[in-house]
Structure formats: structure tokens, C-alpha cells
Image 1 (cartoon, rainbow, N blue to C red):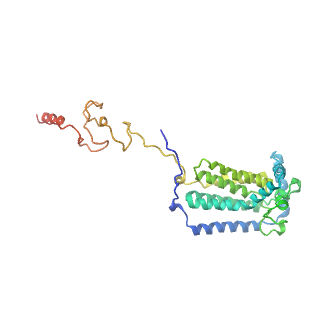
Image 2 (tube, rainbow, N blue to C red):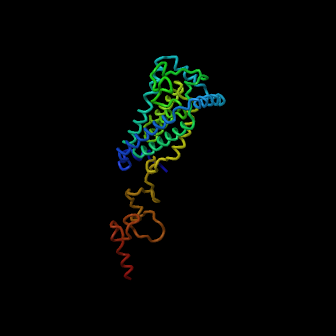
Image 3 (cartoon, rainbow, N blue to C red):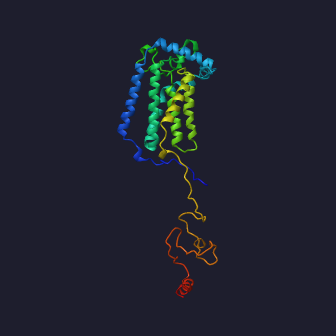
Length: 312
């Protein structure tokens, strides 16, 4: 059995699967605002956030996870490198995810709907965890001995003190949505495209992981937890069958070895002299599965004796 080379079934955008643009814009904007206000509502809880940070740090050491300081030490060898890491953390997270959704909406509408649902579910679950488990990042934890690279080398998206920071909740380290969104971008583009280079999209989550750990904004466990949450969301919101890549079968030969729609050899119908045919009388047909009338190309002379014999 042979299969043709597979391509995405929605290689050309399926306009019918594309949701209304205005509705999607309002929906995504509403979800984003709800998340931002939710993070602000989760602000505070300073003592609890630092207590949880100490527990997470101790758990990582118990699990023998590599120290976050090892990654930061590599970045601190070069000031341009640490500045680039801070810029990546501050400037790539939201634009990359937004461009991902815009491209899917325009080019792969069915994949867009699933990706938007996964991202919304992941972000909502992360907000709940931020409320239930406030966590100070490792850059704030004295026991970690790490440098707040954003404040020292710049740029940074956070205020100097969490109490006066009205733009972000600095006690929302777990889970890391930087890592979660980056993994979803890579997975979504790998599934929705068929370029031989598509696996390079995995560099985005890999770089993001190194950046969030090296800048001391997240623990390793923050990435592990968000990976588990994303796996659950992907399992719940499965891609519709019509949007999956399915193998396309080649036309199957019939019992006589011919392909449907191909010319039938003369010997297949039994009309040619000397042709191999099943035992017993069998009328000649014009086409396989066609009318029972004799084929037009049959020899008229060979039918005449048959009629004469029937008359006798």
C-alpha cells in the first residue's frame, strides 16, 4: 500500500473556519485585560510569597535540579549578552505570541481556534495558581544569591520595589507564562506547517527558558509546572479531525490490476480472441460494472452462427 506525501489539509485558508475578526479582537483583548487585572488583584501577600520562594528553592535542591546561578553565571560573562537576555525577556514575549495568533488566524483558521483556546485555558489556570500560590522570583530571594539583571543592566519591565510597581505583579513567578506561551507558539507552528525548517521554532522556547532562568525571574520548577499545564490543555482541546494532516491514499487497483478511470485492456473484457477468461460462457461487457449489452467492438460474424443455432 502506497501513500502520497502528506500536506496540511488547510494549506489554503479555509474562510468558513475563520471566526469574525471583530469578535476575535474583542475576545482576545478582553481575556488579556482580565488577566492583567487578575494579576493586580493577586498583588501583595509579601510574607507568603517569600515563604513559598524558600520552599521552592529547597525543593529544587532536594530534587537535585541545576542551580539557576549556573545559567546566570554564563550570561554575566558578557554585558552585551546579559543586556540581550533582558531585552528578549522584556520585548519578545507578547509580540511573538500576538504575531503567532495573527498568522494562524489568517493562514490556518482551524489551528487558530484551537491555539486560542489552549492559550486562554493555560492563562486562566495560571492566574488561579498566582492567586493561590504567590511566589517571589529568585532575584528577590536572598538565599539564591542571584543578581537582578534587569535592574542592574537593563532593560526591565518591573519597578524597583514590588510595593510600588503598579504595572505588574512581581509575586507571580509560578507558573512561567513566558515559557508556556513560547512552547505553545513552537508547537502550534510545527503542527500547522510542513516546512523542513519548522523544527527550528523550538529555539524560541529553549531561548526563553534560558533567559527567564538566567535573568533570575523564574525557577526551573516554574517552567516544569507550566509544561504540565500546557500538556493538559493540549489534550483537552484537540485539533478537529478536518484540520489534521491525514495520509492520502493512492487510487487502489481493482482485482484485475487496473486503476479506476484507467483504460481497460482488451483482454480484461474477454472480447479478444485467445484472451484468458474464466471458465464457462460469459458475455462481453463494454466496461467493468456497466451494462449487460454486448460490447460495440464485438465481431458481428461471430454472433451470426449463435443466432442461427438458436433458431434451429
